[in-house]
Image (cartoon, rainbow, N blue to C red):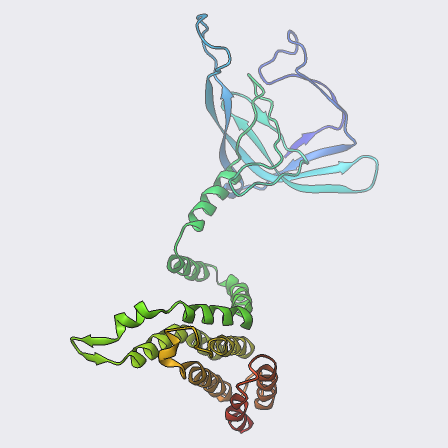
Length: 342
């Protein structure tokens, strides 16, 4: 434990001789008694460093503006600063550290608050009185470790991130509940309007070059342009349908309904093929694909006995959506009503 008295007064740097040298600083008195408490164990010890001005022999030719720098190694301990007020019955406790360096300088605990940026730099920096130069401490081990961790995690691929998560949860099963809740929040962050925009954009990106690459005579035979167009459109819409089915299988009925609405609305916005040379080859696709998507959603809702949405609720929600967003496709309600009511 380290202790600092509340009384101020003259203070000397570590390499100063109080009997010969003048005080390096005049410390002000404080209204609190400061204690630094550090638990035992390697987890609370770390290595650190400061950048300092190196000593050198002057020969008269050096540029005084270019000072030689050196890195001075040190060690530190992480603990808590406890400030006990002398004027009121309260105390303040905050995380802090205490460090010593090979050149004899040291850094004592304080009550100063600080934070680190994404690059590991202190947003509020504390000057450290060095034995030789009063140089500023550039980094603490916590900042360097944070930077190393975030740089690596920020650049891994999605499949690698999945492996990291799996292994993390295997080592720390106590995080499973929290990971499950975060997963549910991510999967639940869906909007049918944004999905509709994605569906429409994906369809509108198809053009005659795509069609010509699929239609015509090939080594396996001849493909009609309409058949080729239909196949390309199915490939575009399929990922959205599979995402809807995945949510249904996870019991996320409301999220699955959002995706279903997005698919239907996106297709509805592509129902008019005029001016679109590609859609002209598969003019019936938007309506039929919308029917298939609703059918798959209804089938998923009917499976199991513990769904969040009941059949009559689904029928009402679907009717409201059709009336407001796809009014020209009223037949969707008719096709789904009988199945949802059963």
